[in-house]
Length: 85
Image 1 (cartoon, rainbow, N blue to C red):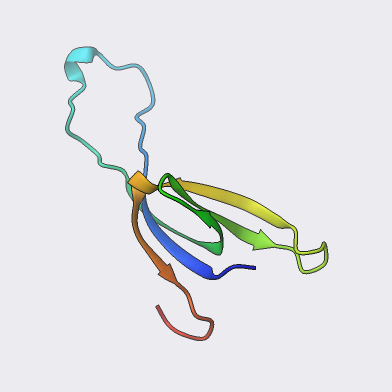
Image 2 (cartoon, rainbow, N blue to C red):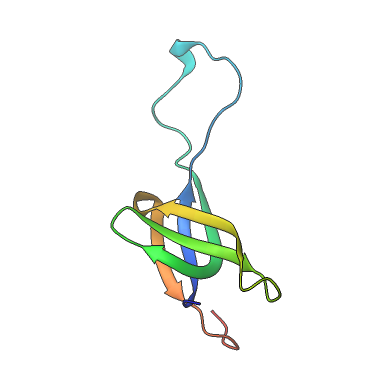
C-alpha cells in the first residue's frame, strides 16, 4: 500500500431553496476547509485519490475512496505514524 497522506482542501457549498435572482449575489461563502486522511492510491494533474479505509482480512480491499480535484486542494502532507502533525 502506498503512503498515508493528509489532504487539506476546499469543499463546495450550496444554498438550499428557491431564491429571487435579484437577491443572489456573486460574493458569499467560498466553501468549507476540510481535511481527509488516507492511503494514497493515485495522483495526477487532475486529482488526488485516496482510500480512507482498508481491510486487514479481505486481501487488503479498499473502501471509502475519495477523489479530490486538484483545484480544490490547498496542501498534501505525508503522515508518519507516531508523529504529531
